[in-house]
Amino acid sequence: MKEEIIYTESSKEAITLARQMEASRMAFSLYNAVIEGDTQMLEQESQLDSQITPNKNTVLHLAAEFGKTQCVDVILKACPSLLKQANLKGETALHVAAREGQIDVVKALVAGAKVLNEELEIGTGAVRDLLGVANNKKNTALHEAVRNCHLEVVKCLLEEDSELPYVGNDAGETPLYMAAERGYGELVGAILEACKSPAHDGPNGRTALHAAMSCYRRGMIEEILRKKPFLVKEADEHGWTPLHWAAYFDRFGIITKLLRYDESVAYLKDKEGMTALHVAAMDSLKELITKCPDCIEMVDEKGRNALHAAVEKGQKSVVNYILENPLLGSLINEEDISGNTPLHLLAASRNYNPKLIRHPKVDKKAVNNANLTALDIISISFKATYTEDIIRNQLIKAGATSAWRNLHGQKEEENDKAEEVRSEILKRVGDTHLIVAALIATVTFAAGFTVPGGYDGNEGPNQGMAILSKKTAFKAFVISDTIAMALSTTAVFIYFLLAMRNEWGKVTYLQLSAISLLLFASAAMVIAFMTGMYAVLGHSSELAIATLVIGSSFFIFYCYEMNKLWMRCVENTKRSYI
Image 1 (cartoon, helix red, strand yellow):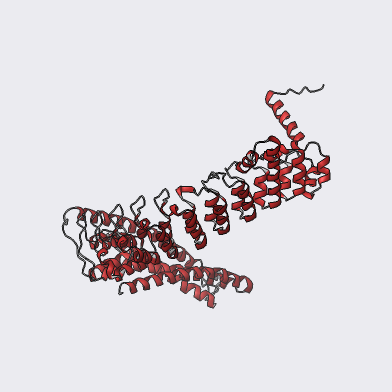
Image 2: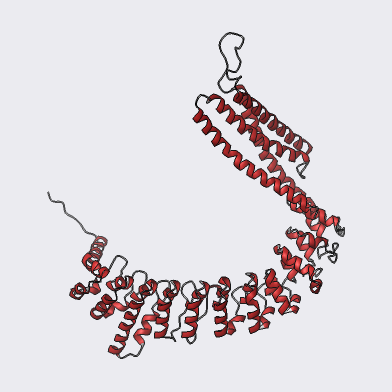
């Protein structure tokens, strides 16, 4: 019995679509003809406009991609409608040719558009329409040419229509901005020279001049300034002018040029009230102060000057320069809105700078609006770090004192809270160390009674003795295993004492001792494993050596980390005496 097939509406639509795709799919022979530049076959083909690839590329797209100019001429003569037909990405053949840098194809496509102008008698409409077509990402052919740095293509497109407004793509990039950001100086020059009023916008409210600051091409920056001098005061969405960016990236060589166009830009503030001086790196700061010395008086919305900003960001070279410059002495003890001097911010940010602490003009006893000195701020610490201890000790040595104004108020409460947090952090660390110590002690204790090679079970004077006891490797195993167990057990006992004494709130010599014992116990445990394995694998030298080599990889990492820890301790010790 013949089975009856029932078609639903959806299946009928799918079949119809499949048949349409099959009918429109580009023939292999036609595809090869375009790739090989076979114009004779193209002239014989009657359905050039209906055959496309899966990405909806037409024969004109293929000819443009592979630079087959003669094929382009034949295709346009037969099917001029393909000129503006887009593929799946919204790209015309001109997009493809511009991206690939096929200058001859670009000229042929533009010429094809001009033929349409003549036939339709619409002036330059067809050419402008073609140049202005944007793909799915709002990129025009000029965007594609700029992105791929094809200078000749860019010049060709601009010559055809210098008045076309090339707006930003989906990312907000105009061709001029894109060229400036990528450092394509020749392309920037070509756009500025050919276009009567080129759009200069970019993402986040930036302009082409902002973009030029990041790649720092002096000639390109000067060209933009010459053609568009008003951009020197244009700010992005954060309020940063090109001078802010130049100062931030330390482009001190261009700062003079920017100020030459308009000195007032040095006094412009961003949305946080910061001028270029607040964000400047070392050389840029010097340049700004040299050209506009009174800009040092500018403060941000928090009332902070350039020294405040440098201290908070940890810019030691900038801080030291300001401290050493007698003309900038007024900044040293200046207070912000909260009454904080730069020394207060040093304590709050933990950005240690001994020159600021020891500077004779620095007021070490200055009190902010919260009745706190710098020493009070560093003392109210929620962490136990070497840097805090160094800053605290250096402040005391320099003559800093506590304010004592709120001895029974806020200071006492904050100290209690800080002590509680410190205690909790150290207790959690101690608990973790205790688990590690217990594991090492357990493993090494068990290894001591399950020795490598086992025991002698034969009757005689050696009954119950370790079989490998006379081997050197076995002796090394016993010694290292004993050391690991003794050190880890001692660490366990120390943490037991700490719990009994309730001394988690401060780093004591007992805690430091326990950490040291654990580090050495870990190394001894690995040595015990390696020597134990070597003792039982002595008859197989290759396997024994492989075991030692693999086990030794632990000590590479171990020595590296121990060296870092030692160097940090040495550095902090040196800094405490600077």
